[in-house]
Length: 173
Image (cartoon, rainbow, N blue to C red; front, side):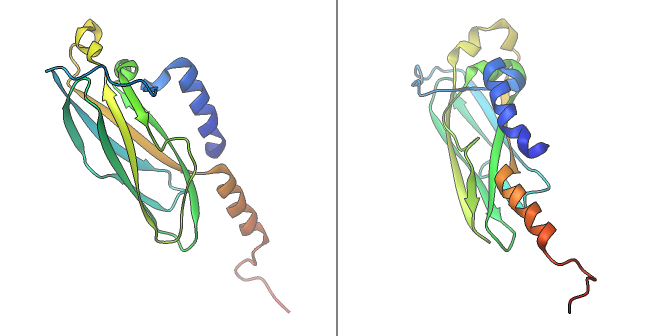
């Protein structure tokens, strides 16, 4: 069920803004202002995906409105190619509408060969309008969190292979 939930989660969050879903847009930043904000980066990996996945940097402090690029790193720890897909959220949820991602690896299937390392870039900016919203006056830090899951097609192939493979203790003649 977790594998099927990725596309459903994407549609639900895009339609509702639930879970601190940031805007994904080609809209350019309006330009930087003096107020600074810290963006923390978090990474999780579903236990069914044998990857190491982490942010290349733990945080960055930047002026509101400034474009920034950050990276996440992944390594396939298995002995075969594995395909994964990432979902994300922003906390606190009330800042999701102010966090703009202009390029991202989320929701796109990513295939890593056995032992392969890959860097995943994301480009973002935080809307200066956050500074004039009384509901976000207390926010000094935003956390961007990604979770990688095994892609549904990859999981189905793995499950099918496990069903057709000989079982330990089976007799062969």
